[in-house]
Image 1 (cartoon, rainbow, N blue to C red):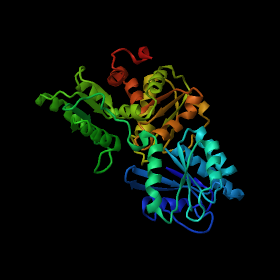
Image 2 (cartoon, rainbow, N blue to C red):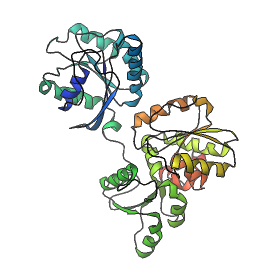
Image 3 (cartoon, rainbow, N blue to C red):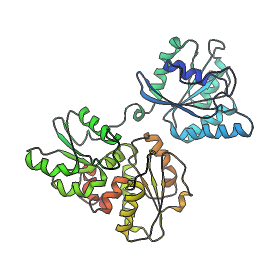
Image 4 (cartoon, helix red, strand yellow):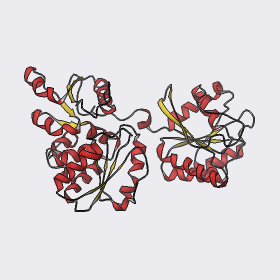
Length: 400
């Protein structure tokens, strides 16, 4: 959730008042917030949020222009914006911001802070309504108890559903009482003392759907299936051990990967299916962009920087070039330079962030696929890995 507005309208004060903590620096000096500052907080009724407190959209000078540019860049990171006004001002800076919000399809609410000092005028309400179609919420950071309930209600009504409660991962693939087997390697890339986020998210979704989760390392799967009578309704594996999982799991048991499950939840699944088929058309000197949504220490067997490039080169027999971008950093080259974009599952980003990240590739008709789908394709099990979601045994290309 991004907080935007002119300098000294009380953006930081509003954040502090809304969450009931002093998480943002407050000062009477205009321009105290210079760069976007992120704060994580749990807000009752909304859940876990990251507030992005931004510099004033009316900043001045060369340095001020850079600050405004950073603030505007934050629009691509958020699910909802709060536009903060004061003193009944809604002028050029606010109009420009709302146009950019509309362009990026970012929902937003308009809040008039310091309303205890300067109440909202009918003229401002009519102006905002005519230019944006929005109502102005009155607020005072000095009296949050009076204004918080109404503002939180407005935020919750405006927030996209996927930002408050993500779409389920596997609820339509299982029924209550089913068993779901998760294959989770503990290798050099596994974090110390914990599972990775996609595995934790899937376990929670299994429990939410009243199913049983069984978690095994890849080398334990064969023995488990031999000594038990349990037949999983679904098996989800780490993409890196797709071949081992494919060999171990009977063909009549649905099999997919954590990355593909996340791709359906957050990404454009049909676009990924189409993009994956383009792997077979790659040529010598084609450049491929791999997008990781988190930052981590790179190991000697890193999935994005080592394994996927190696598998793609081996499968295609071509001399390919690769760039890898971590987090939400900008692309190192013009997007037109790439023949293919491969996006990770995206467990560390929101649906909107992932959509915005892939906006340019789609705009320029650059095929886009997903880590799990690409790995399944080069290992010859793409049809099986996507079958649980397509519901048919035909080739994915035929389905499209």
